[in-house]
Image 1: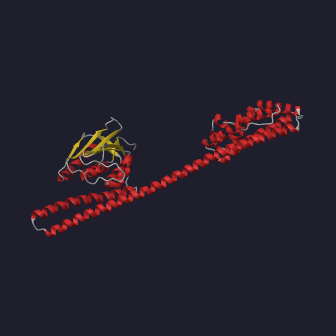
Image 2: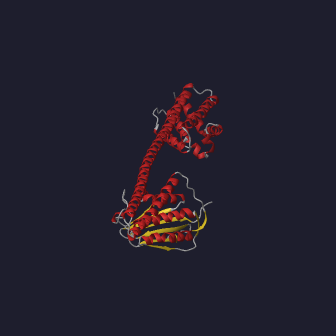
Image 3: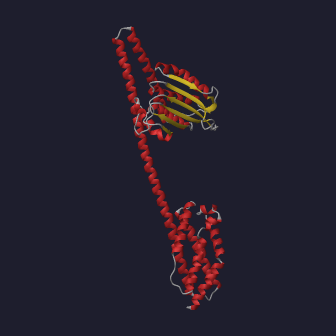
Length: 413
């Protein structure tokens, strides 16, 4: 028995001397194996990972047995093996590659056991058999723990994908509900404008005096203009949602574009006894799509005109307030009742449009726009996404709302 113990101690010393050789043989086997693609590109430290610890544990177990200790400590090896599975997961291995890599290590170690037996022919069969049993147990523990850890991580990732898919389905359902509400509102607005046109037409037929006819004609023209804008909005939103709108990026004078738009819309404001002021540099050279920038500004102004009863609208443009040289700002500010930030609220009437002073970002007002602020602002949101523009809103009850758009000055063309 003492002789067998001495043989195991001698084997442990031999394996310690051959540890680097075993590691090199294992690395070489991995590098040339075409089925282990991740191992070809890993740095040596990452490739070795816990393998030296496994070999050291084998040597320690041989010495424990040689010293007469029958109990073994599997905790250290299981912990290292689980860490190995985690690292291989991070490094992009699949489950087959994890098992194949450890199987190759087994082949290298067994080859060294045979080599020791060949170099020491007097070594007893019992000693070699005991070493085989210890290594088989360690190798089994290593493979089980590595694969278990890997499989656990794989399950966690799969569960994460399921959660992401469930959330995506919920988002799609919410989007469909919001779209349905948006188109329902568009149909409601169209019916409302058609109703006004029908009533005015009936009034023209009933009233013969010139003053009444002139008033009916004024109302009719005003609603026909609104009706025209609404039809344009429905068409634009349909094209945006169908992905048929594409930005045409080119150099332009943003100041000139906005100034001309304001001049053209001023009579519409005056008709409502409101002012429309424009403040900004005439020259503001930027990159962009003149038609779509005009569309964004027009929809913001029309939205302001829709809810403002007294005062008016101020349109400003120029450098961003933060002196961001990479962006420029367009701001449309009204003196209306304010903007509701509560869920499901709509800016109808006076005090319903705001409950408090607010300052928020595009992500916070997205659902309010789509539920209650009409097609015009939904178009603004989608166009801003197209141009990588940032939307900000500030609103104070009974004092007004300011929409600010931050556009990039330049785009990669």
